[in-house]
Length: 373
Image 1 (cartoon, rainbow, N blue to C red):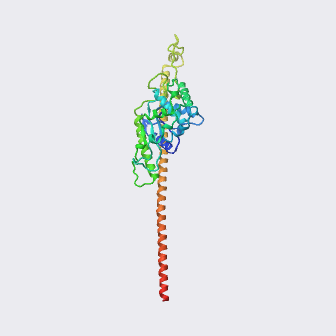
Image 2: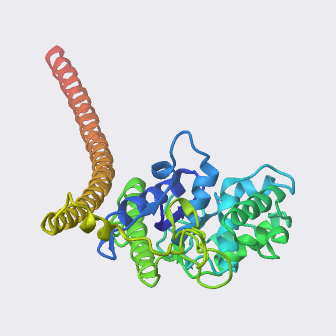
Image 3: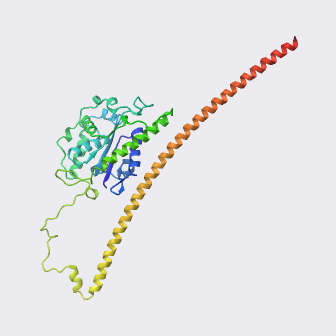
């Protein structure tokens, strides 16, 4: 399958929420008179299949790669050495850079963010600056052998020769290459809903809504400038142009299958020459065949529409679930605040009753003293 947008991210609280938001909202968008097809691992990978091969093929058959580059996502890179096992995020990012190097990827649209903040900073953002927060000097200046070898193997299976830089490209160079693409810097996004003394939960929810909406808008602008996923330039077969990534081999013009046999009557002549089928009957057969072909085409079109509607319904259901959760969280916060206010009122009333009781006791004591005197 080919995709319009491939979302690459490291599992983590904020990063996962952003990836899920991108998948949900982008799936509701329309491009080329159909729903946008988005790849995110949790929705697209299937049980019983090689997940690394599947997401690599999906990336190679996508129009836009959208890596979420955060301070959280690069922390695991600090522990990687030359002969470490494959880190899937590093694998995806290295493949993105390699595809760009080979002109096999139309666009890379990175989303950059630092660490989530407890409260808005001076700029009104809820995340820090990635370039100020992430210490790139700590990233080991090495290339991971397992990652480069696997990418070279997958490209070779597609009939594409890897670039000379693949095996020497360091982790730091991969990150730098990705950040050279213009995308979204999350720390420049302000909460358009405003704070107004809202709680941290409200602040984060409002910022996420603003960030998600902005990212979707920018990704769609990028997507609309691209075409069908295929090789832009260079030798080798086109990627993403054939089902399952397979490339048909052209038959030579003089092959046995293409050569016409001399004096061999075609099928229509045989039908006309046979005594069992009249011209009228033959015409009816052709008409019926054409009708069946039209019915088949119509059925395929209806199936495509139903699949698009199913995708849209699923995306709307996820969006509604996110909305309901946010509303539930808001109600919980509001209820907690109201409970605290009511508790304070009750405590104040208790204190007032205690004070009134003390006053009554003192008045009773004074009255008793006056009676005795």
